[in-house]
Amino acid sequence: MNSIDSQTIVACEVTECERMQMLPKHFGRDMLTVEYAIFAVMHKLSQRYTGGYWTYFELSNGGFYMSPQSDNRFPVNVDGNGFEGEMSADAAGITACLFALSHMSFQTNNEKIAEHYHLLREFALDHAEASAILAAID
Image (cartoon, rainbow, N blue to C red):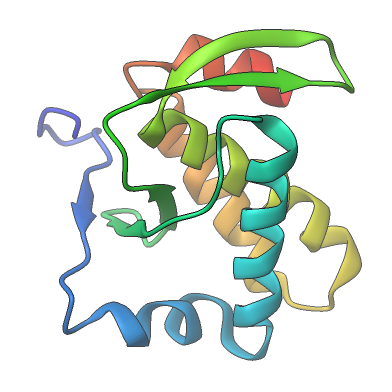
């Protein structure tokens, strides 16, 4: 989580009782397609990822992302731009979400998906692993 000041975007973990409401709240009718796309991108980005529970986060700027619940680091390889590196589960989740949201923004007629891409990218700029995230999505 980032430090709090007037410009910082803060990520807050979604509680278990709020979890079921998050995907419909942020993505409406495309919620399952978005979730599946994020899982699929993560499988493609990291051979170490084999599924599991994901943690949901809401951002203070109105955005949302999810990341695999893991203390392990993930090797990430992006075929399209040659990026190879290792990321925390949080950074890998952000990266997978950015890829999925970008791709989906061109495939759906849901403006919220493109908006969520930009909100998450704005958060990623101040992330501790921003350089790796941005290099991966470049």
